[in-house]
Structure formats: structure tokens, C-alpha cells
Length: 176
Image (cartoon, rainbow, N blue to C red; front, top):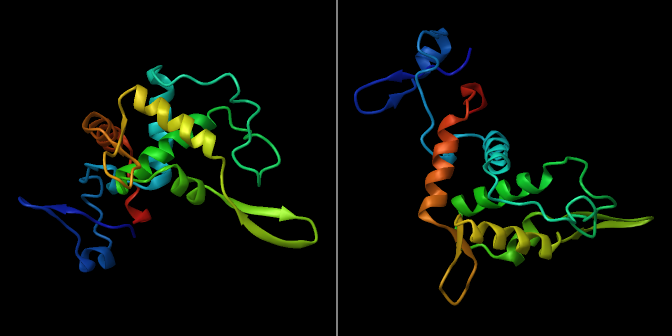
């Protein structure tokens, strides 16, 4: 049986006895209030669809031929990969503000095939990440961190938009 949520006046309670008994009378009583309340995949898909339908973030002309890193052989097959990558960057910055291009290169890197030699780690394309961050700055979702360390963070309007999108994502309680 799935998790059972019972709403009280102050908070939501999950009791193990109700989970064991399978009392599923109030399963859909919980609504997510922020990005951290939904799964990463569910939020990234929803936010990418929002960015695509918003018409503020424009696709560059080279989006169909560029690779996402030197460890890749081809450009992504998905037509909306640019919006998905932008949504993933925004989600990371929601959870941990102050990340720069260099850290994103490492986070989005992968294994590079070298023939008969063992595979090694390879960083992602930094120019692509930088382009996405600058485009998100232009539409008012991201801003530069004014400290010595640098990096980017979400603006208050960007954080609010992400929370609103997360509130519309359907949460499968069995995933938690």
C-alpha cells in the first residue's frame, strides 16, 4: 500500500500503522508547496514545458548541431533538450545557490570512451551552460552573486515561478 496522509490542523501526519493497515481514504490530501517537495524528473519536465510555452527563452540557431560535451558523439535527439537543460540548471540553483559554470561543467559531465583504453571522466561543454545562464539572466530568472566567489542564484521572481510550477506537479506519494 502507498503512504497515507492525514491532514491535521497544524501539519500533515504519516503514521506507520496507517501505512501497514492500508487505510487509503485520504491519499490525495497533500499538495506540494515548493521545488523540494516534488521529484527532480517531474519538476524538470514541468518547468521545461513552462519555459517552452513562455516564449521568453529563445532557442539559438545552432541548437540542433551542438554537442553537450566532448564525451558525446552526437547532438541530443530530443528537440526540447535546451529547455530541459535550462530547467535542470535552475533546479540546481534553487537547491544550492552560488554555483558557477565550472561546477555545472563537472555536474553535467560524463564518461568519455577512449577505445581500448579505460573510460575517464570528461566535463560538459561550458559555453552551452554559460549561454543558458546568460539567457536566463536576460529574462530575469537568474542573477550573478556579488561575492568574490561568484556564481549565479535565482531572483525572487524566478524562485516564485519555480514554486508555482512545482505546486502544479502531480506527486506520486509512493515515490517518497
